[in-house]
Length: 325
Length: 290
Image (cartoon, rainbow over all chains, first blue to last red; front, side, top):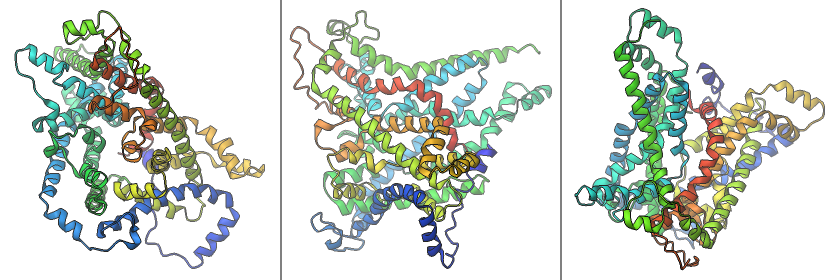
């Protein structure tokens, strides 16, 4: 683990505040002349980042305009904070806020602990063949597209011949319209995440567990520790820092409820609890062509996310971890 | 060795049992759609829900492949995936290699430029407007170029290149090789396992992607399979209007949906053994820091 840390060490320390030495540009030009090919190789990549990352960042200025496609950014009138004002005073803001927050909390409570528990359980298996067999199976859903997952959900839960509702009906109860219901939406979304990502989530913990010194178990056994004691005093401490780090990172991406997933499960029956910031940007922006307003909504979300990520990273560093960037 | 206690044995048994259960829950949905796609209309009519068909019928597959929609969109997706992955690898490698050179002036500034994009982005609408103004709507360029480089993969690949011994490159340089030649003759062959991992992850990403196509592509003739899957299964608006009526058999609409799901998922499942060989390494290359 320490090796990986050392390898990545240069990434975070980018000298932003270092003053540019005199003659830097001159030196750079000299270097570019000498190493023409190397700098030429950078060019397509730089072009990519400028075109598809930095140009859209500049494009967010339309949040402060009444953007009209035919006038373009240059000629569209500036309107200040009009769109932000509209968004924050609209009841839809609180709806989106609540929906996003609740989905994130559901995820934290019902999904987050599962990979940890599953990894600990896998770690207790001594037959390597059985362990590898289970691992092979539980990683599969991670590679399946959200469309297929949503398709599976639809076909299993539909009231017209879905296996779940047929089972309910055969017990004599009345069918439940899971897919079109406000009450079931969060449960559905969270269950999908659990099914798709729990297995994959164990990898990081299993890697941490693989690094545990076997002599520690030996020593614990000699001291008379049973399996529960070993689990609690040897195994668990080995992944504690990983848990804390992942928890902090999760807080950093708190607003990032899986957009593709939610978009696929949204319908007229569950929009009240299912609409989140990203899906709202799509419907109000691209479907209803309110470019400026939806860009303002998106910008609000991006800024809050940025603040969350930066604070999460600072927090991670406080815990003695390396952080993400 | 000490005799294992009863409690320990019970614990092991329960643990195995629960893990087996987890495995079953994971594969059950797949089994359900696969058998659902193979069931015959007569059997479905009698039993309503069939977990294991007594008689395998390929009618649903014959039906969906009698329509142009499925195989055309499969071909589209293969094309999108192959070209897209090639573009990803080409651009990521070309940029990662110079950035791995510690002496390269301006390297840290470019790295900062890349890291910033991991923290903040312009969002859906401004990106859409850029893609639109570049005239890429309704072309596959809109699916390839806006995601040509994953900043995360780029940083990982650069770190990987940095670990390679510099002596090899230096000796090649003395022999008169230029940097591009060194890259594809020495560096890339040395990094093949890492490159394979990136290729597989990029490819799965392209195969599974649907939302870019929803936004950028209106022409349903060039839609990828995932978009059709959504139309057919969730919106039930994807009519196989050109499907061969197969007058002698009636194919249940559920079976058609199941068959489309299977067709969209199978290629990834076939890739999975290769993925599995590499991904643990690939994932750990970057994500385990604690």
